[in-house]
View 1 (cartoon, helix red, strand yellow):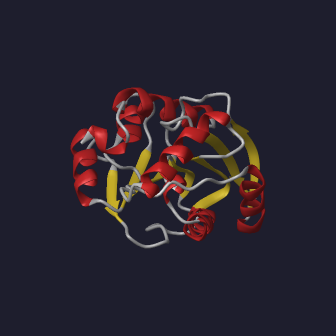
View 2 (cartoon, rainbow, N blue to C red):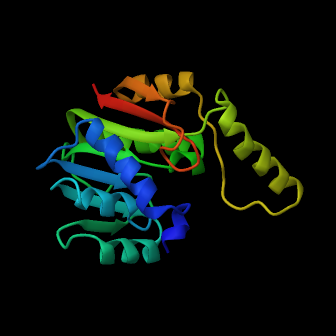
View 3 (spheres, helix red, strand yellow):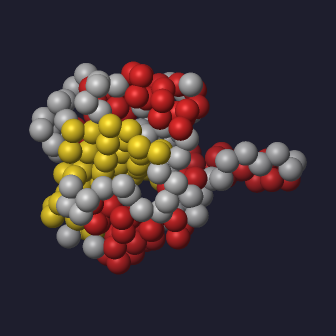
Length: 199
């Protein structure tokens, strides 16, 4: 089950937890993790901070696995809509790691708007994405082209460029704090990390 989200469960979970803590996640805060999968971020955070955590995913089996590994007070919800199952202004932070890489642009943007609703003023959103501007992302695209040619396409791989991130952020009511390409190991297969704050 830990391989279902790209493998390297502990290492990748630790890197993503470090990114959240580096962006300001602290004891007592509330975090919504979109696409929480089998719980690699939840497991890593449980060892580092005491937070109120909600993990959301579209796969019930992954949620069951994540729930079994997480602290009892962590909550997990099955959600198949383009909205988030939370009250307005309920969370300090949100994250979507290796999620927008597998959605159509309009779906990713709909989730940005949903995060705008559920985050508190100045709340932060972290997400990872693939971009053509990074040479180390090209193999993902090349492999996807090969899979399409051979009629063996698996999951969808979608690229988002930085001007698109900036435009989406502005339109959805966020500010881009930073985009961090220097950590090619963050997000699994070398994805870039965007940190937005709710305007």
